[in-house]
Length: 321
Ligand SMILES: Nc1ncnc2c1ncn2[C@@H]1O[C@H](COP(=O)(O)OP(=O)(O)OP(=O)(O)O)[C@@H](O)[C@H]1O
Ligand SMILES: [Mg+2]
Image (cartoon, rainbow, N blue to C red; front, side, top):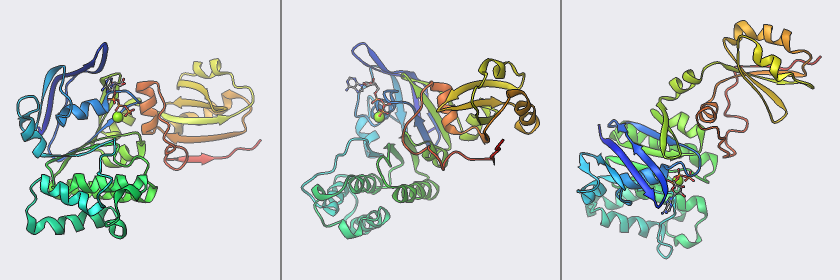
């Protein structure tokens, strides 16, 4: 295990931001922390990066204790954080040079590394502009470049693609994947983008109120929640009646649509449609990571990402009556 935590806890006054966290992350793994605002994701990562002292509990990163060997931890990790931290008065390239010196990257390979990461995040044309005139997305890309430059054993990424355009985001995903495959870099990332977690992470921990509520790979998480989802548009749904059907596990109204979780859709869809009365349209889709998230946290993440596109549709049928 490259990262282990034992009852890792952080309190801010009366508030327990992270509560007795026990985690084991394997070398080379891309590990995702998902959770609503305030769940404790950044606090967890900050403790592992030694930027915050735990209130109690312990953790090891790369074999080093975060409390007693913080500088050893720091030199073996890379950090890409939520808060922007690039120096405004330097150019993009100068920011990277400063970081390269800080991490003692040998002079001979410094330029090559810098060029490599600059092209990776597509900042070739703007690398020599001062970062004060960068757009938000360009800053983000520069930070990512910086975090990757010294080829750390473990890379912590706090919402790495927040606010980036879809193209850049995908670009960065493929790089994260490549890095993890080629260099065996272990990645711990937080994200609000379900698609990102789904695409990238080997395992996902869903956090809420400082605790991990469930942890598994994406396919198993979906399997655990189970079933298929049928969306019905109709005038006067009788939810009570729908809920009483033996193959229905959940039914609720959402955005003017009846959302029904059912077992074995291929067998039961016909039965359902016969029982509910007059409908305008029907749509069937698989459980998504977003459903898993809502199931465990009772909250919905609004990132704009999961609207359309991302929800895989297994079957889509319009029924006009
Ligand atoms: N320095 C601090 N002082 C006091 N409270 C803090 C501090 N940092 C974080 N908190 C509180 O700890 C809790 C967890 O915060 P944290 O930033 O870890 O959440 P998060 O999961 O990263 O959320 P987000 O998705 O919004 O980034 C929140 O209630 C937050 O208000
Ligand atoms: Mg955060």
